[in-house]
Length: 147
Figure 1: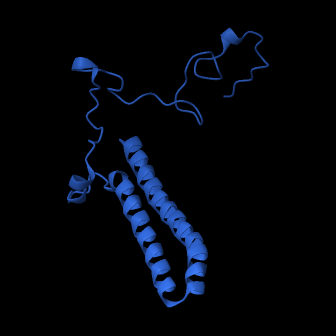
Figure 2: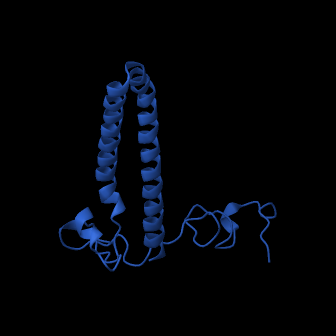
Figure 3: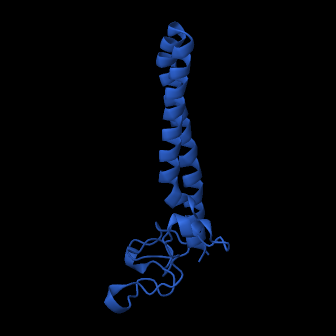
C-alpha cells in the first residue's frame, strides 16, 4: 500500500508513520535513529551513566595495554611529530656542516636546497602522522557507533 500526498487535501489525515507529520520518525534512510538505551540519563553530579564509553588513557599506559582496548596513536602523535621534526632539523644542520667542510659551493647549495628538502620531509612526516591519526579516529568512531 502506498500513500499519495496529492490524494488527501489535508496533511493532518496522513496515515501514521508515513510522510512527514512534523514529528520525528525513525528507521528510514536519512532519518534520525532513536538514541541508544540509557542515553542522556545522568547519574550523580550530572555525570552520564553510559558505561560503554571507553576510558581515556595516556600514551605510556596505552603502549603497554596488551588487550588493545585503547589506542596509543592519539596521545603519542604530538610527541612523534616533535621528535621527527627535531631529527630532520638535526639532519639538515649536519648535512650543511658536512658539505661546508668539503666545499663552500657544495655547502651553499646544501644550505639552499637542503632547506627545501627538509621542509618537504617535515610535510611528509606530518601527512603520514595525520593519516594514521585519521585511521585511528575512524576506528574509534566505528567502534563507538557499534555499541
